[in-house]
Image (cartoon, rainbow over all chains, first blue to last red):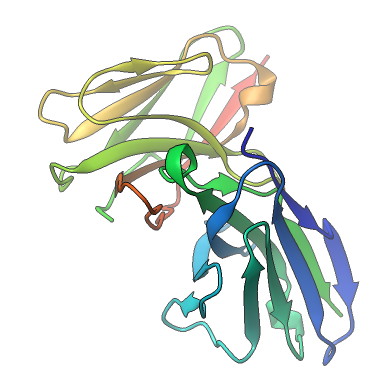
Length: 117
Length: 113
């Protein structure tokens, strides 16, 4: 149990365009989802936390107008990188947490590698 | 989250036990010790967690010192597939909602033939 998927696994987009990354909890209801970013040879950095039906809470230094997060259902959260630039190229990872037995842990997705050309 | 300190890298021969240390001297009474690992270009994978007692599961053992200021993750028989970055994280275990995870730099474990 507790499987989280991400789509796409990798994406290449041109500078100035927007790209959407999906994060799905496949076998549990995710009341909270987390979005992380990881640059090469660095650790994961939390970008934002989203609760289903509420606005996301962004970490300091993360632009909420650039990284749009939607968590409209208990199984899906999306991260949209708007007007992407080469410096946004990174590995984006989501995690999900649910209710009851699923409330103690974060279950991670496999990640999405974004390359902006 | 309380800060943790881990060695940057370690090597281990395949088939031998890998012992990964972690210092967490400022851990609070309600904070658990969690271990995750990240194989290259994948999402983190949960390994084990504990509060004050030693824990064992099918992946690893976790030894926490009596004063809880440090811990050791033990992979009893390391294989090449255990090559990864291992993260030690301390966090409270809340009921009803998962708390944030703060990832440090972790230990890069290289298992060799």
